[in-house]
Length: 116
Length: 116
Image (cartoon, rainbow over the protein chains, first blue to last red):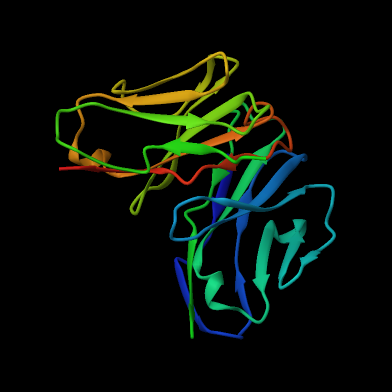
């Protein structure tokens, strides 16, 4: 069965520190897609990245980077030199190509506090 | 281009009343899905509409219903409100169906519903 686990419920770091948010997924499909979303206090989930199962290259976008490792079924997200504006809830999600339920499965989210 | 627009943003209702929430998807997007977010349960899928047809439904009682219009705008309705219905209701839109491989969904800011 498909499942997304974000074991870290809440993380607090001091500004400028690096922080990594963990995401572990379960799927039987060989073709699937992984996503990260950011939810600031306003409520909207902001799309950050999509990665397909055949592309294991790590991705870097500014201070954000993603480490996709199929061997450990993980898709971790690192924020470098964190800023207060990074404070939000971050969701990891999974979509399978052969998904009978035809929906995206979200993890429970990790609440990130960046302390000034 | 304009993002996903949800109205109203905040509302307070009394137990037993009904509520209708509205969602305008990104222009050109034909799929609209709805999610309920509560602190205890995280993001839970309610239903998805594509070209005016409900394609998928989550595990919610029949008090939760929705529809989609020919212009892709969608409404969801909750009848006989209960205290436990207090939540953030998020609408998301996408070009094609939510479960389509690699399809990215984009969220609105949500409607904060408080039932008293």
